[in-house]
Length: 514
Image 1 (spheres, rainbow, N blue to C red):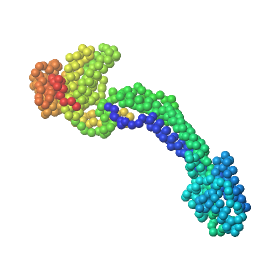
Image 2 (image 1 turned 90 degrees about the vertical axis):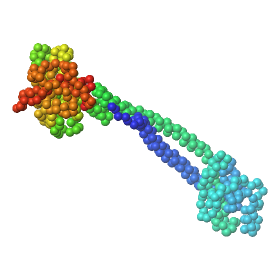
Image 3 (image 1 turned 180 degrees about the vertical axis):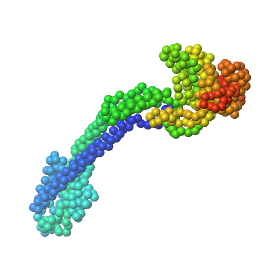
Image 4 (image 1 turned 120 degrees about the vertical axis):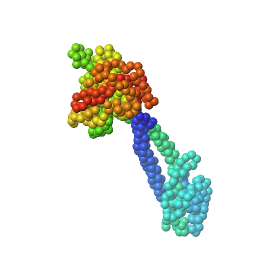
């Protein structure tokens, strides 16, 4: 049964997610750094240009003022505004008033000079917006410094600089020596077109970035599906088929990279598993379990069942090899089905002989139930070209472990009960099942036997099917009927052995199974 795996994102989805996130983070950082660097560079250049322009204006205004040509300054400011350069010029007094809004400066200069050197102006005042505080305050106070800032007005954006106009020693004759800063030059440049172009560039770059990420994700994702995901899926399908018992699948190996090597390794593994699976047909279940449970020899109690075809040697001499193998395989297959049905394990096949081992609770009973069904195959002898089986059963302590050497060994059982079961199988005639005394006693202790006393010798007892009334049921389950005890001389035994002839089995109830 296949184990359930928790639901999660597929490998394809994970690869696509990793690709998209990696590209988004990597390219996004590069694009962000580039855009930030570009914006900062433009702002730095704009600031430097404004500062240079303010310096030049400072020099111009200073020179104009030295000859007392304020009207020239006003005209200069007006002409600069009329030029379509995006620059706006202004000059503030240190108290924040426009320098050319009235005749206060002319009156102050004439007072300092003690004469009416400059004629009051009659032309309209130069219109200028009030200063922006606290930038103006910072520019009009010591220590002197140019203040750069961004300013918005009426939907337009300006980069603006306040440049202090110093009251130099050569200026004190007109403007007095009681202050350091005479005023503040205001220089503005309209950067709205640049910002709009910048936003358009960023928007186009963002769209291009998204498109590039998607395109690269599709290309890389398709590549990853082709070189990784699909081969892995193919490997998964082959492995899934193996878990379901299908060893025919293989992974197409078209490349020699790591994935191709993995596919080739999986193919070799499947072939090896198939070969091992086929070997399980020739190896007992105890042998297979010993691989995980340990192969050290140990003493255990087991019930042994030997079955052997009677007259098989003469049969092989009278029939062809194909016919012999065919009928023998059918007869063995039927016996194996019966033995497995009662929880037995096939230890080995020796020609036409089967050696089976029963272990666990109720092993003697299950072995006798299997023997009873195998015994009843005599009633279907015509299906097996007249061949009939004899069975021998013995129970006792045996040694179970690996017998052989490092390159060829069997996991089997050895001991006296094995020999006894083999000898009883040799003594049993066609259609008979003979049971040793120890097996009978094991079942009698549990109330699983019904004994019919022997009234003849063993060789005079006909191997007939159980007569009506020869089996009975107890409250605890099935009971087997036996005839005996008989005394039999077995090869390798100094004394005669007490044995019993199995005459009936209540296979309808089936008895306890392993």
